[in-house]
Length: 294
Image 1: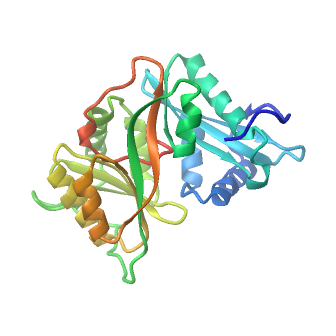
Image 2: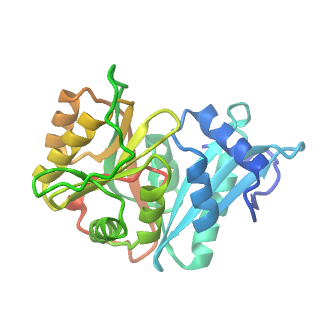
């Protein structure tokens, strides 16, 4: 993250997400090589807040997002800076505005940090809870099955179903895993165009479109065996590139991912600032919703 030695405009909060602002935010994502889409920015605008810094020409050159999670916590993410403007304190400034936003709400601040970010955020008092790693599978040279028609499977099979009942079941398992209720977010992710909600036994996962790969997560289950079987079925039904963010403690799942053609990429640290830190059944977490959501 950048130092604060250089003067720059103060961050502003977007009161509405205009098409021009959305295009500039998407450009920041592309410049940084991240996977988020316009749908993600709309989630932050609708359910949370987006803070930005503009240059003298009113171009957005830095961003950050805050997403409240139930009544106790809020998620900080999307700290992005235009490449040629890095090193001048813009990233730090927009992060500090996001953190102040969370603290003004009286909530615990949560985020997923890169290794460099972990060192920085610890200076603000953030404490690492656990680590995870991103996995990537390139696109396959075959056509994936049609996902447009929901498939309701019998016991022991995988179903693709984003019904209200299925989303409620996923949200309930997700809340047990994280110690935070975020049903509105789960519904938003599961029902956006291109998304599928996959289920096998008590294992459930959302697979959604990204800028360059489909993202698998959250993947939650009380059974590691069921989670692995569901992942097998998801990978068999997806020919496009895939991304997953998996806890470092899932050694058996890492071995399975490598066997399916995934390669490990960068790591992240789940960090928190404030008390009480939400506490759930983290053994239920086999893949997160992404560092932008946790």
